Image 1: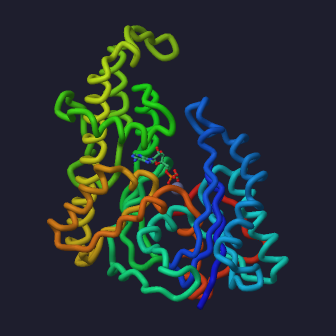
Image 2: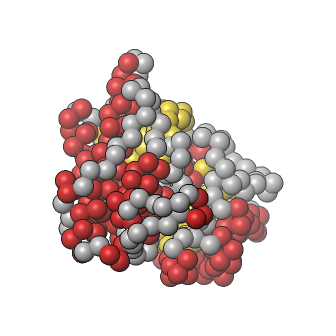
Image 3: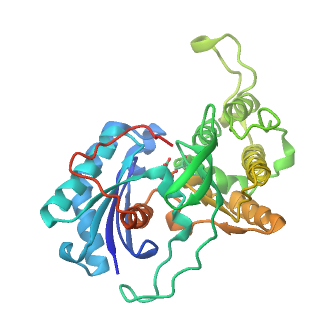
Length: 363
Ligand code: KG4
Ligand code: ZN
């Protein structure tokens, strides 16, 4: 039995978790900073890193207490060390190094994006630390999709630790587009879940918004055109350019029905674009002679109500298994970090105390 303590502080969630043998989550502690960033309509990096500093040790202590384990019983300490906000990452990385050094345990740096693709494999064993039935493993190779605030990327996934990028966004990530659309529609913060909820009350056919698929074979994504089209539907065409651009209306001029319909039209355009790219990705892998045995999704936007339904439908149409994370593991969490670290450790991969925090991804 291998117990790994995971730490995650890449953006605005301070999280710690203890995971057994890569998939059994003994506890998943997440301290969200939503209330601190709400009035700015987005994450303020300096505020985020200060809050991580204040919260990291109580969050780690709570994880140990909830799982009923001590530092001595942990086999390794894992931390999401890339990509993310550099000041935020540094807090988690420093805490993980200190714990690993003091407890004499291996340190494992984990890629946050890769970890999102492991989230669908996580489950809670029936009785805490006692062995429970593991969730059936999804077959590889898989087509992986990470849709979050910073990424919209497709991967050919060979195993939990090996994957190749097939396509990514050329402008906004889908979660970023959701967050900006929520500001345009004055739908509240955090934008993604608020817009998702509003969209469920609207008629998606009431407005026509563009679905950008790029070239006929492209596996890349683009969401800035959709966001701008929504902006113009809400505020009218701008008069003047750049900073001097002035609009004739704002979201306050819309009726509740117009707002809900626009949210629904946005949601359908965004999700159908993602589904079209997944279908293309499956065709691409089949044409390469490496057909995907399953479809894996992860990242904050995998919590989206419409996307969850449409991905299952696509899997059924193609006759392949679908891995969608439980809601608790869609958003940033440390269970996915501790879980993936188990597979890295099994391959003999661990890090020394020089482990850097890296703002960008190599994937
Ligand atoms: O993975 P995540 O927690 O952080 C990053 O690594 O970026 O993803 C956060 C993103 C935000 O953009 C948020 O608006 C979006 O996920 N999100 C959603 C939903 N829940 C969260 N987007 C659409 N529908 C949702 N239900
Ligand atoms: Zn994330």
